[in-house]
Image 1 (cartoon, helix red, strand yellow):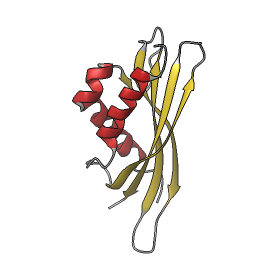
Image 2: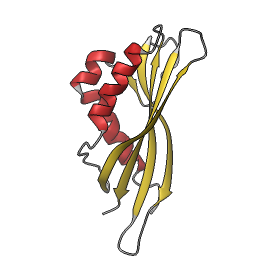
Image 3: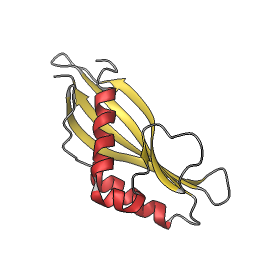
Image 4: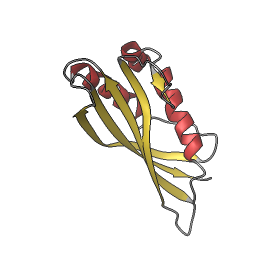
Length: 136
């Protein structure tokens, strides 16, 4: 297996997030694959880091993707960010994604890290999900 399914997986995850009513009710259209330059909204989602490893076997090609979804907020405290994190989890966990290449076997929550950002009022929650994909 290779990194070949990564683009298809990212496209599908992005489509789920931008199409989910609960997520967009909280953050609007402020969901980014690439964070735009210039002034950013006070509350947004950005696709984060990804780590991929081969999970092929003698019977087929597969890969394990640990993919990040980062929630950024300039609100005091974590309450709004945690509500959005819950909506993102509800949208992604066990979702039935159709990929343009390969297929998704599972998509599960792996872990989260909530922290203060660069400024005293900035909050970031980095969610990590684990996707198992096969190239069939």
